[in-house]
Length: 457
Image (cartoon, rainbow, N blue to C red; front, side):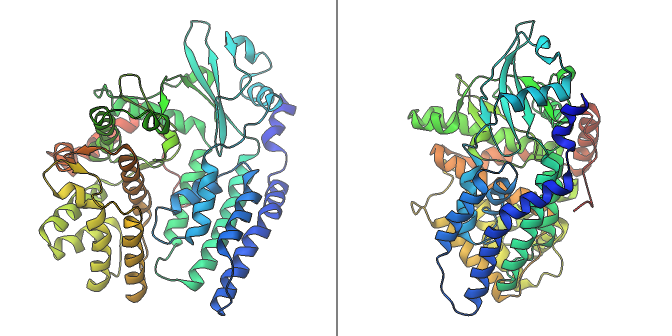
C-alpha cells in the first residue's frame, strides 16, 4: 500500500518544478509577444497559441479547464490563446492499465478487482483531472469509476502559478477587467475539484434538488467504492449532446431537451442558490426519451441568497430601464466603486444576457444569424470598460456569467425555439431569499457538502 500511495505523494515540490519547466517556455513566449506588442512589434499570436496548445496537450491538468472558463469572460485572456486551449477540454488521451491498477490499489486495496464483477481496462472517457472506466457490480449494477490522475495537487498548483503569470502579463497591457478576484475564484474551485469526496456530496445534493424533475438524471455515488481520488457512481446511458444534434432531431425533440437543460441548471440556482459551473458539451448526455443526463460535479458554486436576489433584481432593472435598481443589484453581487458610466457599460452586457427572458414569445435564444454577434457585444463592452477605467468582477460573478454564456451557446447549437420568458418566470415565481437560505442550509446538510475552500488562493 505504501508504494501504491507514492502515486500521489512522490514529491509535490519537484512535481511543480517539472511541470513549470514544461510550460514556462510557452507562457514566456506569450510574455515576449505581449511585451513586443506594447512596443509596436507585430507577432503571430495565432501561431504561438498553437505552440502553446502543443506544449500543454500532453499534460494532465486544469489549464484547459481554466482557459475554457476564461473564454466566456470578455477578453480575460487574448482570444487566440483561450480558443486554442479550449480545444484541450475534449479528447484528452487516457492513461494506461498500469496507472489504473496502481490507482485502484491505492484507493481500495490490492484485492480491489474482487469488489467488482467486471472492470473494463479501456477508459470510457478522459478529461483534464481524471478518466472514467465502466464496471459492473456483483449485484448487476452498471457503474462508472472515475480515477484521478497522479500527483494532481502539484499539477494544479503549477498550472495556477502559470495562470497567475499569464493574467498578470495581460493586465499590464489591458486594464478593462481586473483579474484578482477572478483568479481567486478559479483557484478555489479547481482545488475543490481535486476532492472526489466533495464531488460525491455534490451528486447527492443534485439528486435531492432535482428529485422531482424526471427530465434530468444524476449519477448516484457508491460510497463504499469511493475515496478522495476515486469516485464510483451509477452508469447513465445516453449519447453526447453533439452526437444528438448531428442526428438531426426534430424541433419538438430539440425543444424538449432544451427545456430539460434549462430546468437542470436554473431550478437549483433560484431555489437553492447552487449552480453547476461547467456547462460544456461534454457534461451533457441526451437520454433515449430526450431527457438529460447531467455529468461531472466537481465545479459546483454555492451562492449567498442576496446574490441570487441580485440576479433577479438586475433582470427586472433591465426590463424596466431602472438604473437605481440596477446599481443596487450590482452592489449586491459585490461590485464596488461603480460609476454610472461604468454601470451603463455593464448593462449592455446584461441586456445581451437577459434579452431572451424579456420577450414573452417563442423565439431562438439569439435572433441574430451573425455567428460573431456575441463576440461583437463583448468587444464593445470591453472597449467601454477600458474607456471608463475598468472593473473588478467579484468572485461570484465568474461562474454565473460563465453558465449564462455557456448555456446560451448550447441552446444555440440545439436551435431551440422556446418561450424563455415564461420558463424563467415559472422558475423564479415566489422567490424569497429567506426561504432560499433555509432550503439551501437543509440541502447542504442532508448531502453532507463540506464548507467551500474560501481564502486559500
